[in-house]
Amino acid sequence: MPGMIDRRPAPFRSAMALLAAAACACALLAGCGTPARPLESSLTDMDSLQLRSWLSPQLRRNIDLLPVSGGQETSRWWGSRINAMTLNQTYQESFRRLGLMPDVPDTGRYQLQVEVLALAQPNVPVLPEVALSIRYTLTERAAGGGKVLYQRTLRTTQKAGIDDSLNPSEQLRIATESALRNNIADLVRELASLALPV
Image (cartoon, rainbow, N blue to C red; front, side, top):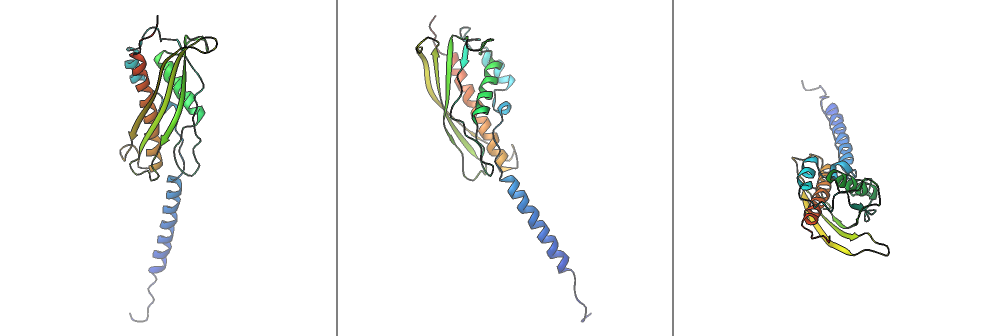
């Protein structure tokens, strides 16, 4: 009819405004920082069982971990960093699973110093690839400083994708945790082949 007013556009406009507001809220939530978690960054039980069989009996229950340095706090708006507490918990949990930490703290024959040198993450986390560089120094415990038995910087990279998570921030967290876990596994493989003094 020629004189009637079509009222459909008003509800359509309000529905579109509501949809746009919901999309903005989702974008804000997806953009929040997600820090790495210690248990997800630690070696898995299966990896620990395999790696444990390669280790020298001289290392078992004989490595004291010094406080890990180089951690960074995650921004509340963006990124996935590894803070100092998470780093310490990750290494302690991994070394406990491997049977490398002594039953009584500060009684091991060796000391391991861990220093995170670099954590490279993309600015746009679409299918992110994370690179992590960590310096390890294994020394014999001695008054006045022990002999350095092993010192090396290990670099690992890890990617995450849609099959890991649909959320880009979660993909970045997963890639960061996996890069740290792989770095620890590489360290253990190198320690397993280390010729230790008797």
